[in-house]
Image (cartoon, rainbow, N blue to C red; front, side, top):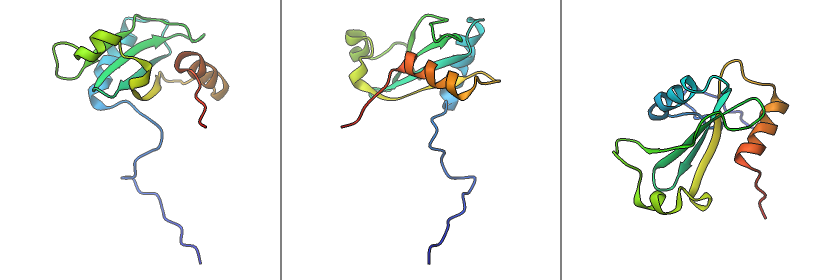
Length: 119
């Protein structure tokens, strides 16, 4: 006999979402990017983050911003390699409401964040 577990409000969603510490930066980026429909958020293994607004075609709608919570500057690693792809721990797009349809989101995510294959 299989027992189904009910989802509780405290369970963590598998979908990546902005952390409280990232929300103010996302709002600021969107405020300065009238064409932005979302903000790409890339978290690095050092704790720094890279963010940029994207438009409805998946093109940049702002400059890329690298920052670190609670720090005056980014880390030395990021200064050297500009937040190398190999050090990415998670990435997602924080969408503005109303979000684009699923196919559009998938196309923009592939263009902005790339696609990965596992072997």
